[in-house]
Every structure is written in C-alpha cells, then in structure tokens.
Length: 513
Image 1 (spheres, one colour):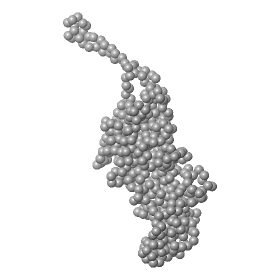
Image 2: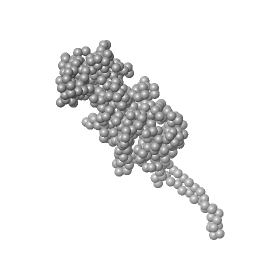
Image 3: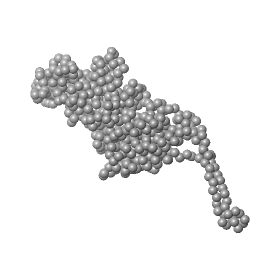
Image 4: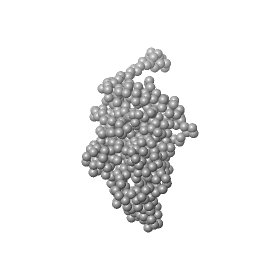
C-alpha cells in the first residue's frame, strides 16, 4: 500500500496578545497520513444505447463524459497506483445486452426461447401464439395461419428469412416449411420452422362450428379438403400433416450432438383437434440437422426467468431460471447484436483496467432499439460478482472494495422479455416493467458485504430532454442508494458535468490517521 502525507501550515494574528509580549503572529502546522492501496474500486457503467439517445446530442455527450479527455475513465484511472486498484466494466443496453456471439458454448446461456417455436414463449397469455384448429390440414400451398394480429407474426419463404409470404411454399427446398417471421409483439426472430409431412388423409377437426379447411391462393379450400355438419356435429376431412419444428428433438441421438434439445408441443394426438382434445400434447421429434444451430446466435440475451430477473444470483446449470436467455433481437429492420448490424448494440466489456479498450468501447456506442433498464442493471450487477459469467477478478480478503454501479437512461422503460409488459413505445397498465425493476433495485440495495455493510453504491441518472418532458422516473429515482445519488438532467450538456461530479465523489480519499 502507498501512503499520502497531507500537510498544512498557517498563522494567526495575535492582536490582543501583543500587549502581553507575544509576537504579532503565531504560526501553526499540522499533517495527516492516509494509507492508500487497501481500498480498491470496481465501477460498473450501465449505459443507455437506445434509439432516443441520438436526439439532442445525448450519445455524443455520453461518450465525452465517460471516454473523453478528463472524463470518468480518466478520473478513475488516475486513482490506480497498481493494476487492479481500479476496475471498470461497460454495459451498453437497449431491450437486451450483447454478451458476444462467441460465447454460444457457455453454460450460463438458456436456449429455451431461442430454439423454440412461437407457441412456446413467455408471452403471459394475451400475445401467446396458439396452433390453429385446422393445424393438421395445413401444408404446402395453404394460407399462412398467422397474422400480426393473430400470433404476432406472419410466414416467410425460408428459415429466418425477411421475405414474407402469404402462402406456404409448395415447391423448392422449403416446400411445406411454415417459417414464422419476426415477432411483431416481442421484436425477436424465431430460429426454426415447422415442416409439413403428409401422413395420410382423415379427420383433422371435429366438434366445433369453427372447424374449417385451410384456403389456397384462390380463396378456396385446399385440394382434397371438405367439411360436413354444423355446430358440435361439424367435421372436416383432408390431407393430414405432422409439423415437427426444425430444431433437434429429445430423441435425436445422431445429429447436432452439441445442440440443446427442443421438447416443444407441435400437434394434437391422432393429428386431430376435437371438442374433448383441445390441448396439443404431441412433442417435437425433429431428427435432422437444425435449420439454424446455436452457433448462428448473434449474442443478445434478455431478462432472466422470474424471479431471478430481479436477483443477483449466479447462474447454475441445475436451475434454468438462473441462466440468461439467448434472444435474437430484431427491431426497426435491424438485428442489433449482429456484427453486420449498423448500428450495432456494442458487446459488454467485463471489468478491465485497459483504459484504451474501455474508451474505444464507449466511443463505439450507437443508438439502437427500445428501453429495458433492468437488463442493463442486471449485467452491471453480474459484472461485479466474483464467480459469475464475466470472469470477474477475485477479491483480496485484505482489501476493502468500493463496488459502484452508475445507471444512465434517457427515457422510461418500454419493453422487455415479456411482450405483454410493453410494446416498445409504452408500458402496459400498472408499469409491470418498472415493477420488476423496482424489486431488482430493492434486492440490489439490500445486498450486504461480509461486514454487513451495503455491498453496492448506486448512482442513477435520468436524461430528460424530451419536449414535453417525460415524468421523473420513480424507479430510477428510488434505485439510487441515497436521494443525492439520483440526477435529473434536462440538457445533454449536463451529462458531462454530472459524470465529473460523480467521478470527483468517487475520487475522495479518507484520511486514516
């Protein structure tokens, strides 16, 4: 450890004491020594990279405040006598964070959503896609059974394609492939297709007046399909198709040995919907190579499964709710985590004292998609935890650690993993995204170190340059460790001064003796 000696001296005029023979001034001096080196600092920067940061020069001001000359990185790096005295992590966030596509083999990733079809997604009910009653009659040439208003997606001509189609392809490599488009509700790409495999002819729907044949491009029932009766006596007959999803099923022991298995439900027993058999139970059994294996993932991860979206528990393979769900975020025509995206949501930078690399990462930040402060905060938290997914350096038991999180956002939360909570423009009634983040902040504030003291110091910054201005974010305000650590900014120029103020506060040394 280093020591710092602070000395001071001065004098006092002795106007009244001169009469007693004292000199006209009396000198004094004092000094104090502090030990510097056993207190170390680790700072996580959760920085808003959403689309609105392009307005009013906010993203430029943020880059300057953090990575510019004399900015926060310069301030904090100046406190480091030895490598490791100060660490900084950078967590750019939008609706997701980008942990880097090269990490597809890591065991902290939950592949459930990424691999599964739209009918097996955490959509809370109202936006959950469901298989249509005539599902087992849907095949090549039939109209796509979904629309944006019915399921939240349409059909495409091939896996993960951007070319939409009204009718299921009836020729070529992807004949009979029912491939979902980007999801209109969750702004995600699905990474597979249902494949139509004819298994004969027969009844595919009975017992409901809603039973009907799929239609073709002429608006007529598909070839060979017909219905009789009405009401509960109605029955429809035609070609029967099964529809496995093109990710390896649990019985696949040959192909894709390193690929997680998909157990999604893909149809009804006996390939038939009935009034007494309304719940599909047949499990996916695709045993051919995946149409989109996990090594094509671009690096996006989203909120963890509740309740761990609001905790700092470390991921463990024995509990899938502790893992971080892979996501293929796609909004405004961009797959924001892709290396080919322009702009790209920059990958997170774990704790580092490579000041040049940290500055380069901040200066590369660009405005991207929608706002989910919680996912940025979650990864700022993880970046400070030893034993977590970001290989956080071990802590020395002989040192004291100041663990700091700085969360900056220029807007209110608009979307997260659950489409029912927000549509990308606004939250649902009751602010459910904020409610989850509120719980997260409370858990973060309640975390204690080995001595029972608060483990983290949290600064929060709301940049409110909208006209008319957004309301004060209650969740941001209350997330700060103390009221004086919440900053409401009304102009981009205040970003630089605020980070300077925080940097100065973090730089203060305590005189020890």
